[in-house]
Structures are given as C-alpha cells and as structure tokens.
Image (tube, rainbow, N blue to C red; front, side):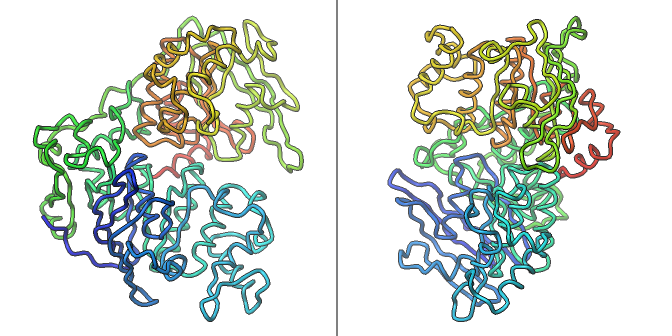
Length: 604
C-alpha cells in the first residue's frame, strides 16, 4: 500500500541512510506541519538520531543518505536531493532547520561566552552571520533571545560552566532559534535534566513554538514525554518506521507488538510492579533483517509469514470510528495488528508491597547512618549539603530524589568516600569506622554513564579481573560475575564499545559487586537508558538484592523509577531533606509542597 500524501513545512520522502556495512534507515516518509510536534521514539539502534542527522547533512564519514527533502515556509520553498554531495547545507541549517542536542555542556563551546555563541547564529545582510565584533544591534538581539528563553541579559557574559544544566539548555535553545528556523529538531533535549527543569524547558519550547508557529521534531525514549507533548508519534525499529499516528492512539492503543511492549516497559508512577515488563533480546542490525519483519525474533505474535517478507505499512482504523476522519494517517507495519490490539497488554502484574524485601528482624539494625552531613564547595555561596540525616536499614532499598543541585550526588559521593564532608558523620554499623580498602569492600557505587566509567582499552574480563584482584578474590570468578548480571561468559573477551548501553551497565554492576559489598549506591544508573533496557536493569537490581541480600541507596530524579526500586524515599532540596518516609506515602500522599511540585511536573 502506498504512503498517504503528506503536506507540511517539512516533507521527507523515501529517506534512506546507508553505510558500507549495510542499511541504517530504510524508506522513511516524514512530514511536519507549522506548529506541529512530531515525536520519534524507539530503542537505541532504531535509527532515530541518524534520521535527523540526514535531514541536516550531519552524517558521519562513510554514511550516506538518499531521498527527497522539501521545505516550505516564510523563506520560500526549497527542495533538497539528499543523495547530492554538492548540496549546500548552509541553506538548510539554522535558518530552516535548527538542532537542539541532548547535552548542552558538550554542544556549547566551553571557551566562548554564551552571548558570542548565540550571536554566531544571527543572520546578517548578505547571508553572513554575526560575530563578537559586529555591532548593528547584535547585542540587543542576543539580549532579546535570552529574554525569550527566560534568562537575564548578564548570561551573555558568562561561560557555560558557570551555569546550571537547565540554564545551559536554555542558552543552547536561544542559539538554535537565533536564525528564526521553521523547524526545531530536539534530540533527547531533557534526558539529563531533573523533572522540574525538564518541565520548565519543555513549557518554554512549547511557548516559543506557538509564538513562532514553528514545527518540532522531538527525539525521545521517554514515552510519557511523547504522550504528553506530541501531536503525532512515529515509532522506529531497526531503521524502519513500524507505526505512526496520533500520540493518544499509538501509545494508548498500539497496533504493533513492538509499540505495545515498549509502552508496557514504562514504569508506572502510581504503583509498584512485582516485575517490570521487558522486551527479550535487543534491536538487530538493519542489514540482518532485510527480508523479514525486523521485530519477528522478539515477537510473541510472529507467524511464518513474518519471516518471509518485510511487512508493509498499512492503514489502521481508530478504536473509535467517530475519530476516523480526524485521525487519518494512522499506519502500522504488522501482519497481525488486529490480534495485537485485542490482547491485553503486558504490564498489569500485581503491585508489590512497598516494604517487600526488608527482613522484619532488621528493622532495628541500620547498616548506614548519616548524621548532620554538611559540605560546601569552594567558591559556592550555598552549601551542597546542609545538615543531612539519613538512615538505611540492612536489606532495604532507599531512594534519594530531588532536582539537580539538591545535593543527591554529593551525598552519594560522601557515603562512598569520594568526597569528604566538612561536618557530620557517615557510619557503617557492625564495623563502623571502616576506611580505605575496608570501606571500599563494604560499599560500592554504580555511576550514570557506564561507557565513561569503564576503561575503553580493557576487555570486560580484564576489567572484572582487576576488580576481583583488588578485593582479594581469584580472577577465575569473572565468569560467575558475568552470569550473575545476566551476561554470557563470552562477553569477557569484548571491549565496552562492542556492548549496548544496557550491557555496559550490567558490566559496571558486575564490577561493583566484585568486592561483595553490603551497600550498593546507584547514582542515576538508569537515567540514560532506553525504557526497555531500564526495565531490564531495574529487574536485575531487584533480583540481586534478593539473591545477595544487598542494601541499596538509589539516587534518581525519576520518581517513577523510585516507586519501582525503593522501600523508602528521601526528598532533597537545596542540600536539605524536606520529606522522607515509605515510598507509597511520600509519592502517593506527599505532605511537603516541594514534593507535590515534583510530582506535578511529571508528564501525564
């Protein structure tokens, strides 16, 4: 069946991205209208980022695009042949399509002031762009752009490292909007931000979008975000479009089994599941599934016909016939879409009691006690920690939540000995006072980014063997560590770059478990993972807790994750604990206004 005719400010037809190793994105059609928000979702490896890089001519060396790109808007119509190596991308980037990246700290120059970087995108007569030395209202234009993104004029004179994460993202947004683009592409723009800053940035983008009648392509693995912010959703898998339609239809009544499984993996905020639903396996390379349904190997509904040809995108009738005209254009690439829609979706398992896993006799035996912890960093006007009290019982899982800058990570680093507090005590009971190597054996930490935490030059086996040797354990236990975290023994010969994000995080967990610690501290250890991989890692941590009797201190800005992993929760703000208690009480009936504000900021 041919694709429906699309119109809009951006229309991409038969978009393909290939490398010498094979296809990366296959035959994608995409349209965005003025003022419309289109979300593209899917696991890592699905082709989301490569798609938007092709639209901007930013593909890495050795990767090529083909297809047709049509742009319409106030600057006139423009047609781009994506396969033409002579394409002048200066006509497209900035003035027609702008890009807002995930991490503003790496996308902004650390050696140039923010005002200079915003000025670089301001168009000048003759097609030039402004530079630091230009006059003719450049300073006023920069100030106006800063005002649009809610920042004071003096930010122009600051360097990115002098700003918070949310302020840096606002500067990056101002720079992206400097040339007045028709379309903004936001690639995971809020992944690294806490829930309230995320809400503020997204509200800001929505307001600017309305004021400028600007289209928005939102690349995200946060399905709750896509559900609340997008008009339409495109679901990609292994380089293919497998489902598209309105956000309410696609994520509320999925017609493709991949979409259904992905939606089921999203952790609920309202209750705790005994086991989070996952998707077995991983996304295949597009070149390995050329003549079949790419999802067939992971699909519970697959039939022989799914493995003999690539299923075409077909029209799907809305659940409510009255919406047929209003929601035209819903399509899915599944031979069994009607069966998928009649099956109750995975993920409705019974809620687990909030206190499950805590031995009754341990109630009076805390493993970790923090009292009056204070820490002020040099040059800071306010303390990172201001008299923090915290207690973790043996066998318990405790979450610490709050905005960026609330003191969560500083607290975690003080607990594991990576920072020394100015005042207060960190006590490990039944052996309190442990320091140095003794402390390292009792408490270990798993960081947010496993790729930067692992040595890229060492194999997984060497990395784990070093951790075992440091703990006085034999190197022969490498295979056992890999098995413990659900990885094949053969992974010992691989290097981190050959692993997926979830596999790397499993290796990081295995390394942390090498000394057989009593307390495992997880510092935002699932925040950068796809929702399906996040569910796998959270299930793994819950299993390890039961099998090994681990006690956990879980640092997170994701309250839904806290609900799934924790028995009790501490809410921090400005270096202080403002509320604490059983997770069901704090997140179900919060007493502090700040906790209520955190919950209200979560996309619904």
